[in-house]
Image 1 (cartoon, rainbow, N blue to C red):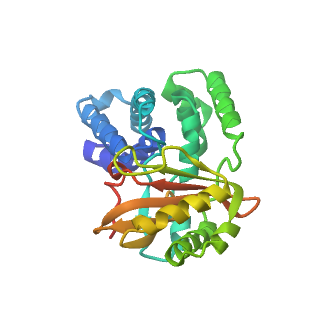
Image 2 (cartoon, helix red, strand yellow; image 1 turned 60 degrees about the horizontal axis):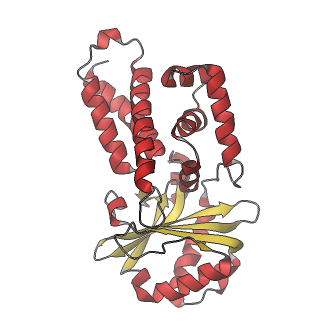
Image 3 (cartoon, one colour; image 1 turned 120 degrees about the vertical axis):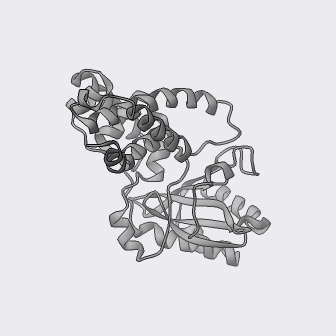
Length: 290
C-alpha cells in the first residue's frame, strides 16, 4: 500500500485512538500528522503489517503525551474536561445514533481516572475490539499483563455507574427540556429530570468565566443555572447537535460556538446525573456550525 492510500485508509482510526487517549482534537490531529510524517520516511518493505505498525506508533506516542498532559492539568484553572466531538444535525438524529462511532463524552471523562497504560489497554480492548495478542504486541507487554491491566481499568470504571453509557435518543428530550427551561425560566420539568445527586461540571480554562468547582446536588445545580442563565448563558441562539454520539447543545454567540453542553444519563432512573458545559474557547475551535 502506498503512502497516500495508507494515509486515507488509516488516518481516521489513528485519530480516534489519539483523541480517546488525549481528550484533545488539536493534539490528536498533530499526533497523527507527526506519525505519518515519520512513517513516510521509513522503508515500507521492512513493515509486514502496516495497520498494526501505525497503531503501535500512535498509541505509544499518545502514552508519552498523556503522561505529560496530566502534569499540565495539575495547574489547569478550574475543572478540566476533554474536547467534545461535535456533529451538527443535518439529518434524522436517529440515523446519526446508529452511524456515529465516537466514544461517549461521559466515558471520555471517566477515562481520566485511568493511568496512561490502563487507558491505552482499555481503549484498544473495549472501544476497538483488539484481542490481547494484538494489544500485547502494540504495547510490548505480555498478554497476561495486558489482561491484568484491562481488569484493573475496568474495576476502576465500574465504581461509577454506566460503564458504557448508551448513546441514544434518550438524551434528546433532556436537551430540549434544558433549553426550554433556560428560555422560559420555568425549571420545574428540568428539576424532575435530574437525579438528586446531579452534578454540573463546567470548563472555562481561565479563558472565560466558569464554575471553578463542580456544582453538586440537584438543588445547587438548579440554583446555579437560575443564577447564570439570565446573564447571557444562552448566547444569541443555539443548535442541537450530536456530542460524542449523544444528543447535546451548541450555544452560539456572535456567530461562534460559545459553549457545548452534553449529558450523562442514569440508565436506571432515566434521568440526568451529569451536565458537562464546555466553555473554554480553545477547546471549541474545531466545532463547526454548518
